[in-house]
Length: 420
Image (cartoon, rainbow, N blue to C red; front, side, top):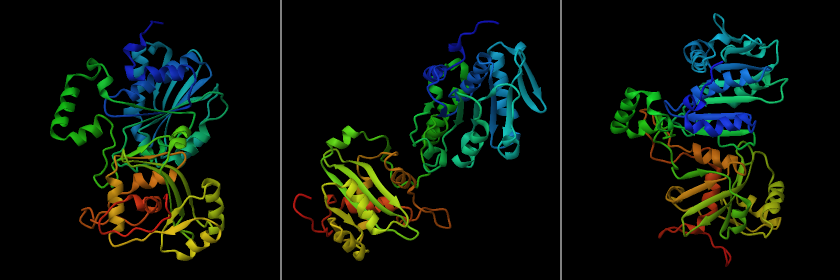
């Protein structure tokens, strides 16, 4: 077998991921990026190499629609076999699509998610399905569909490698863009662009097209070639940062604010805890209670677990009975005085902050609502002027929490105790 330098086949941006796979550091590899970034080439190389090194490893490669398999992942894996100069060791069948490693009989199977029964019945006679590859994973219906497929395929082995390759959709609230914000220890998220790929791999025309689009439409260039989520133009908050907020950071917070947006029946009650850094104009949101059907008594119990010093809380004044009930349980709850234009003013205040940092593990619902909050369109496809009043429970709670930090000449704010 001829020796090949992997550095001639794998772009430099993937060296770290290659080592992660080599040392079994993760199970799920989400490889996102723009055109020509090398993510699909990398996945195909790793599958062929991995199977040839592990005699018990088989692979299943998936697209949402079966008809798209042949001209994409099937050809991509043939490319990998040829580039690795191991064609003599592989038997490639085109109908049905299947690849067999001749020395051991290991298989690469191809499935479309539009044929779910075929996926559930997938079996291999030797070893187990170690490698799973979802190409253009954003075309799938969501994580529920992915989980069902994984549950069917990830059986009988000790170590699995699952690739999810895709160009990030433009919409911030696309399911795949939200999914990668959720931290889990066996997941690695990797972003790549064509800028880290050797020019000769791409060809001169590819680079010409990229530069042309950059000149005439930079937003489209950033999305298509850099894989950036540039949005639809209707996003209300462009200053969101989703990241872990550490315990050490929280210990140092000295301007903590708390707010409540009421719910109960079909709408969730939302309690938020955040730190407002006035000097740097940054907001850190690090705790939430978000639940439908939660009684005020139980809400008070949960708040007391977090708010051990019984610091003041600003709540939506539309529910005076709920405020009174929480006060009867010993909490210092005050109603927000929502004057004319207070919603618009509050949202614009949040928009004007340098950064809104949200911890996706501590506050998953807050992260989801802030990221998904977009202007609605009218029947002509134009954005409406007003801010939407739905799926914004965390946003309202944050507005109430920061009411005394917002400064406006004609706005009335609720009286609070000294030291608030």
